[in-house]
Image 1 (cartoon, rainbow, N blue to C red):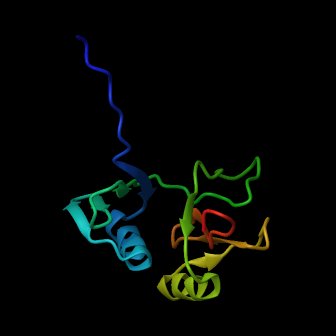
Image 2 (image 1 turned 60 degrees about the vertical axis):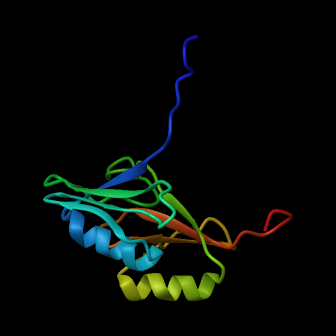
Length: 130
């Protein structure tokens, strides 16, 4: 019998001018330990071993623009991060070096940019599954 293929997301990788610096930002934001640290490559992940974030040094990195414009590097992805207290989470992210994006498309979500410009959203889950 032929076994069924299995796919498991192991990590999302973000490029940066310096992998270690960006990894330190997200380590401080998420509280995850470093799983791997090599020249030009760092991985962080939650203690339960589930999918984490990886960072690779990209010497030609170009800061993404949010919101997108035709003449600037467009964001290729963003991270959605659930928090339990939106205002405190924003303050924490700002203290680590994030910036609040000028454009905020939703009242109950805060779009921020990490120190190299990757947008990420902080939100509090509401509704029946909260």
